Length: 68
Image (cartoon, rainbow, N blue to C red; front, side, top):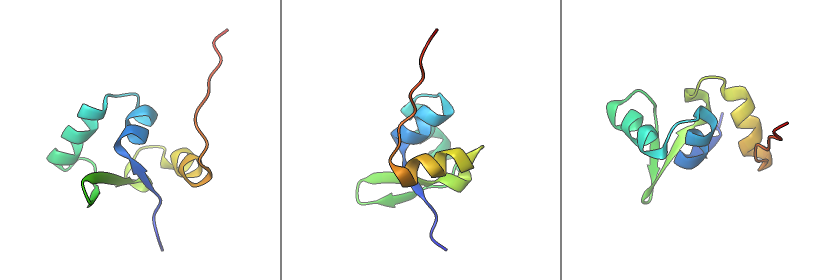
């Protein structure tokens, strides 16, 4: 079964942390990732609450929020 892969930026936005922090988590082994060329991809299943992120990644949807 193929896992949905997300970019570092997508993971950072989803987790509400900086991309640098995601890189640090990858380097420390706290988040699994694969390197494809020069870029890292993270299996959506390695992130907490990954079901919503996997759905966004597979549909290409972006999170939009309106502030009241």
